Length: 121
Image 1 (tube, rainbow, N blue to C red):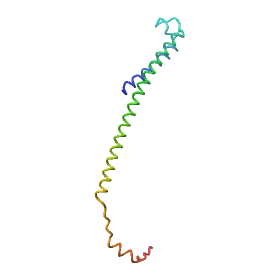
Image 2 (cartoon, rainbow, N blue to C red):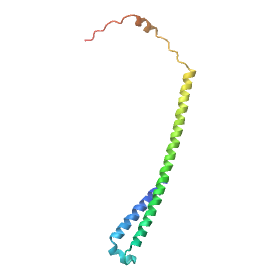
Image 3 (spheres, rainbow, N blue to C red):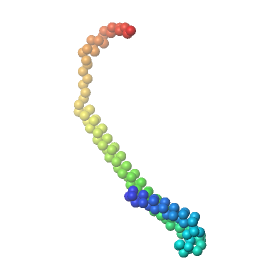
Image 4 (cartoon, helix red, strand yellow):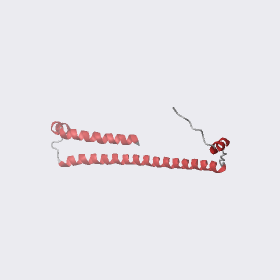
């Protein structure tokens, strides 16, 4: 889809570039195409074709962007599901294995006595 979008964007740019060159150099190239004069109807046809080509390009671009948004949402949903499973597993381990904190016997002896002063030079 990305290639199709890129191709249509290049076609729109090429179409309008060719139209610009054709209209600017009309006096010198009108004999080559068999067009005697440039009327408003012919210019409107050119612009209408270019506008339709632009709309097709815009449609492909929006379809491509929507597909990317859907993929992102799907990946975020999967990521959130995996995070929830991981959280449940971690909580399950905390419930099944309660942590027992045993008091350190050295801390009990030191907590009742005043610690000696240290002189820093």
